[in-house]
Length: 105
Image (cartoon, rainbow, N blue to C red; front, side, top):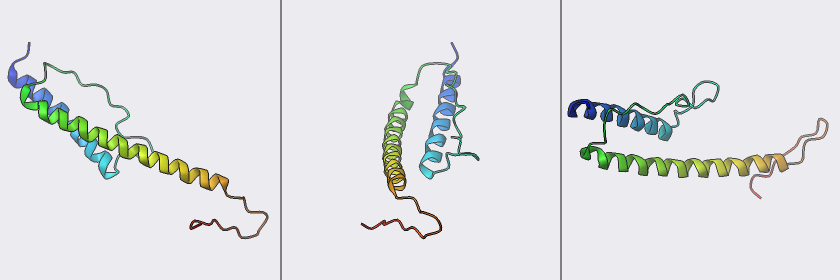
């Protein structure tokens, strides 16, 4: 079994990476060129020991912040779906006539 400092260092690294991913998500910097999610290649870290008690609060807070971020993403996805449905429901322009979409009514 690794020593306490190795375990702490491993957990600090893991939590730091997860915090950084969450911060990028909240800032809107989650997409790479081409629209791919930047952390899509993420794989679970190799944990060298059990979670030290002193990190339990940080883990609970990270989980709560991730839950909030998921709710925000779900709301954004829902609104985007509504917008797409409205655009698809608009009558297509015929020929070279101007077409307008009523966004107020």
